[in-house]
Image 1 (tube, helix red, strand yellow):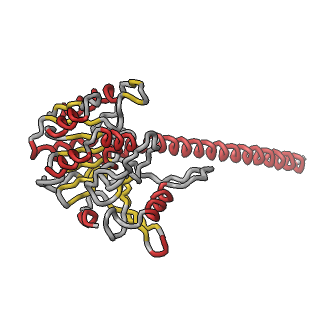
Image 2 (spheres, helix red, strand yellow; image 1 turned 180 degrees about the horizontal axis):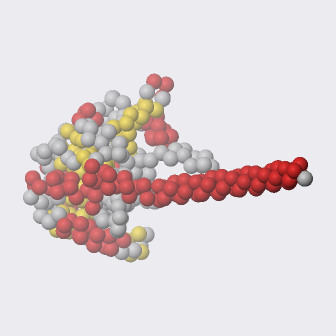
Image 3 (cartoon, one colour; image 1 turned 135 degrees about the horizontal axis):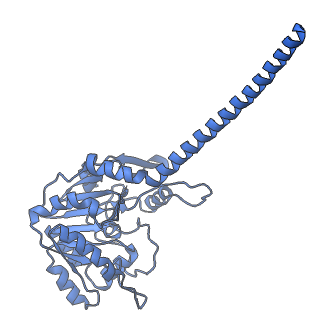
Length: 337
């Protein structure tokens, strides 16, 4: 009897242990699954909203304002992009306000001429109202800086447009398509007057296409040639190096085309010397949130501290050299290549 009772107890204990083991295994899988779900959720949230965290980190803690004073010639702010996303709506040039306030202050600027050559209303004969609608955002932003924005009427004859540019207190060339920008500059014969205004030292703002146009040529733009430029691709040449705005070099799974770095290497192989010089050519890749401040023959990289620029040039045996430039760095050496 005692043996039977003991046998029953032992079997009961074995059954209990098996149930306990199954329960523990189940609990482990539940914990594991929940952990994986939480980690995946955190990763997805990070991908969706990390740029917002980065925005405020840069704006309040890692922001590099301009340090160079104004010059009697060439006072330029050349931005990669006009908007950065924080919480709420995107504000045109909003993230650049601290820099623009300091930049404009010595000039006591009251008016700025907005040139929408890269982003016109009329496209292949159809009025899209693109520039007109966009101008309302530009007006709002500059009003906050105490500056009145004036829209250049692209419907005016070239001579009238020249006069508008000639008498401009400050100039802002927005982004859009760089090929279209250069075509409109050439068609209206204002390349010379723009160069003259730049060298006179007035405050000059460029964004995206309006930044690329300040290089010797527009060959390092990302834009498709939606229009032809019979006069070639030579541009303002305000700086002696090429600029690639919106620089990024991602490699996506399944993508088989050239990367941005591949394209820039190709440019350097076909354009080995700096424009009109015997020195090696160079390209500066500007990331979003950064800009080049030019004051005379001096320059500096300013803006969001987590967005360094890239200096591209060819090394021995055509190896592409990519040198990272931290935000806050002086770029005087590039002004003399």
